[in-house]
Image 1: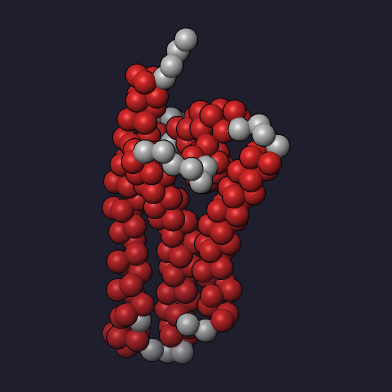
Image 2: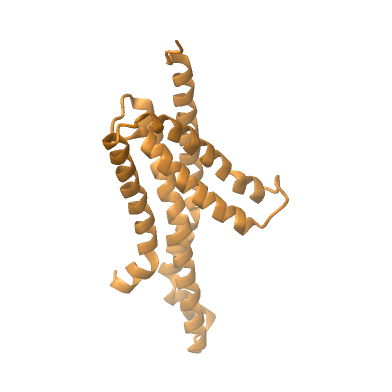
Length: 192
C-alpha cells in the first residue's frame, strides 16, 4: 500500500480509534491519580445514554422519525456513539472484574471499529472506484474494458458494502451484553 493511500484513506480511521484508546487511558489515569474513581460509575450511565440516543439515526433512516436531515442524524450518531463509547471505556477502566463487562467492552469496540470502517474505508473506496471509472471513461475506454480494469476494485467495494451485516449484529451483541451487565448491577448491588 503506498503512503498517500494510507494518509488519505485509512489514516482518519486509525486516528479516530487511536484517539479513543489514548483518551480513555488518559482519563482513567487522571481519575485514579486524583482519587475520584466514583465518577467512572456515572460515566458508564451517561455513556450508555449517549449510545442509546445515537440510535435516533436508525429511527430516522427507517422514517420512524420524520424531521431533520438523515445526514445530520448520521453525524449525530457518529459523534454520540464515539463519545458514549469513550465514557463506557473509562467506566470499564483497565480493571475488569468479571466476564460480562469484558464481553460488552469487546463487542462495543468491534462495533466502533466496524462503524469507523463504514465511515472511512468504504466511503474512500467508493470514491476511488468512481474516480477510476471517470478516468477510464475520459481515456475513451469502452464499458467492457472499464469493467475488466476495475473488476477487483469493484469486487472489494461490493464486499465492503456488506459491512452493515457485521456492524448491526455486533451492535446487537453489545446492546444485549450491556443490558445484562446493567441488570446484574441492579440485582447484586448492595443497596444499603
